[in-house]
Image (tube, rainbow, N blue to C red):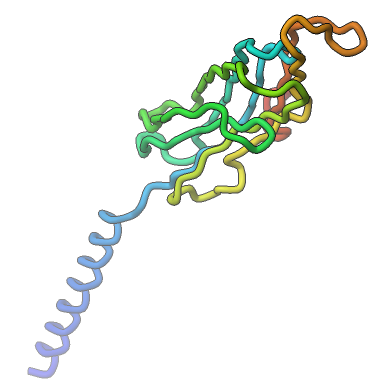
Length: 169
């Protein structure tokens, strides 16, 4: 009788352990982790009123197939100048390119630091969700010459140093 009672308790305990393990496996959260890998813009020297093309390369470092739609924005000297919704999460796809157009009409002439960023609460590593291009965008008044005889055009690019090391291998 005593052995039968111990066996029943053991079976109940085993069933509870298995059930909780199964429940935990079913409700695991996916690892959501996006990283800005590169930001570039062209032209790097432009006249007020020109359109600046900004390209942002994003990598999904987490689970593929687990994703969502989030806002990505472009800032010039801290002011939002472009944004759009970005959807990610297709199985097996880890690299994405998001492109923006900034119409500089109405902007003041000067130097602008271009930054791309995004935020979503579930990101497991939110510290790599932004990047600022070190080379400034130079905007001069329409029809004005560029400093030190430079011409319009050029491209400015900033990349994640870890990515560069990986690509160089």
